[in-house]
Length: 452
Image (cartoon, rainbow, N blue to C red):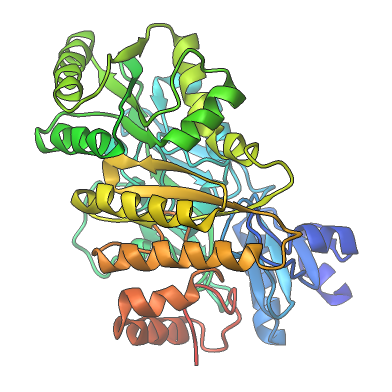
C-alpha cells in the first residue's frame, strides 16, 4: 500500500473502520472489507490506480454512496476499493441542448440543487440519494420512470476507465447515433465489472410550467392496477404513478401523518405540462379512476402539499421498517409486463400473508415494477431463511410471467443464481464479454455475471 500511495493523488486509507465502511452497502449481505480504500480525485487518478492494480493482480471495487442493495460493493477477494465520492463536480451544463456532463460521485440531489435556477432538472429519483455513477452502474430508475425513462434512456455518454487503466469515452451529446457498437449501454448496468464509470453525459429536461399531484384510494388492488393500465393504453401522459398496498398505506399514515386517509390500496399520481394540459389530463384521469372503482382524486394544490405527498412515498421504506422495530428487511425488485402486474402482486401478497412475516408493498405501477419489503426477526432461527425463500419465489414468479428478477436494484451478489433462470444460454455471451474486457477478472469480481 505504501507503493500505491506514491502513485495516486487521492488519500489512501487502510484503517479498519474505513475499510469496513466500504465493505457493505444497505442490503443484508455480510461485510467484506477491501484491503485499502483510494479516494479518487479525477479520471486520471482512477486510471493510475487501476493500472497499478492490474500490474499487481489486485481486484478493484468501485464505491459511490454505498446505497446498493445487492452486495455490489462487497470485496469478495479483498483488493482496492475506489471511492468516487470526492469526484462530485458539475463539469458542464447546456440549457439550450438540455444536457450536462458530471463526475460520477455527484449525487442526484446535488445535481438538481445546482440546476435549480436554470429552468432544467434531472428527473430520476431512486429511493436513496445515490451517486449518478452508481445509478448508471446499476441501471437505476425511480418514480418518474414512466415518463422520463431509466438511466439506460437518460445517459448519452460515459467516460470509463477500462481494466487496463485506459480512459475511453463512449456515446456523445446527440440524441441518436448509428455509429458502431453501443458501448454506453454495455457499461450501464455492468456494476463495475467491465470498467469504472468516472464521468457521465446526461439528458436534462425543462421544469414543467405546472405540476399537479394527487392520490386516489381503492378497495381493490386489482382495480387500482387496472385503472393504470387504461390510463397508459389511452396514451395519457402521467409523470408518476405509484401504488401502495393496504399494509404500506397503514405504515405511511402512521409514519408520515397522512390522516385522514384510509389504509387501503392507493395510487399516488403526478402530472406535468402547461396549465391547460395538466387540467385536461387531470379530468381524463379522474374519470378513468372512478370508472375502475377508485374514490375521489384528492389533489395536492400547493407545492408544500405536493412535497409532503412525495416525501411520504420516498419514506415508505422507513415507514414499513417501523411496522416491526428491531426487525431486518429484504426488499424484492420484481418487474413484469403491466398486464401481469395485478396477478403477480396478488400471488406475492397471498404467499407473504401465509408466511406470517410482516411485509408491505410499493410499486412503480406505470412500468410494472414492484417492491415488497419482507421483515424478519434476526433473533429467529429460521426468520431470515423464510424471508429469503419468499423473496426468491417472488423473483421466480416474475420471470415465469415474462418479467425480470430485478427492475432497478441490479444483480450484485444477491441475485446471481436468478440470472441463469432469466437469461439461460445468453449467460455464455455475457461471460465472453466479461473475459474479453477483463481477462484477469479483477474488476469487481464475483458480481453481476457468474464465471466458471
